[in-house]
Image (tube, rainbow, N blue to C red):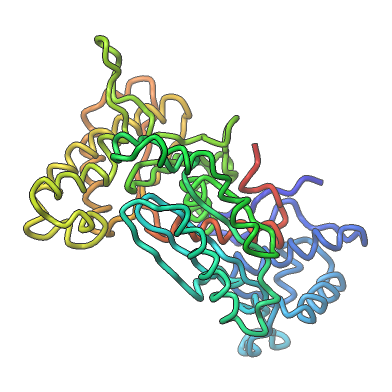
Length: 407
């Protein structure tokens, strides 16, 4: 039996496919099916869990009893007022399990501790001009130990750590003003292996924008959209790709590497610009610097306020045109109906970028194509660390263990 993700619509119950099996040998899978059913519906009485999974009432009773004994499920107050006996909804126990997500970026590192329901319980952030491995990695180890220690007796329920970082953190180093030595030191570093030396729980590594795409797939637009191209605007721009509710990582794990997308065709000896030079916050930083303004304003609400707004509007025009070109190109190759755009900037700036991108899309020739709909992502700057934290939770408790890393 090959498990698949839940198929659901906004108007129908969240039905699980495939349905559960009553065979004794399927106990582990059935427990995961029950947990996923409850996770998708927030809370359910046993009768509804049985109806949605196709498992017998007796099987559901045995499974939920075990999950309660393992402190993965809790009971809510009885619901009265319906026909028949009062029902007791079951819900995930927030303290049932924890995972940690670590995002290592070119401007900052974020650590999130997430509980069994996916809520952020602890947060640590470190900011820098560009990370130095010799100082950043020890600091990450200290923060990890501190966050776990603050869990107290619940620290034994930490199930894993997910690390999210660019495949080549030192990439485009000349653009960043870095030396070859600085670039190589990061590009040759196995971040997953380095973090594994700091903890006794399993560590998973994912490309940062792929991890952000995971967060959107699980907690955001992925609940309604089966397939979409995901674009994340950060210091550099990147992306991810979802087909049939599975993250598609590609041959080298680099699917959705939109930063390298050329902005046009070669017309001379020089190659055309890449998307990274037009739709990244790095470019907005440089505009602010040239005007003697604080470049960090690119990442917060100041970007749309005086005196930053003039440069921001100029950047929006350039970025939106480039993103529109990416949307059309992606639609032509992938035949997808939706493109989700998110980023590490303010929600107001995200809205302005999407609005201008949609305006730019009106000027493209869509003949031979079905136009894609551009929508805003929901996770924002937390997306990469949150996606990293969701990977261990999914690996331990979801029915389809390959959902996010399936090639």
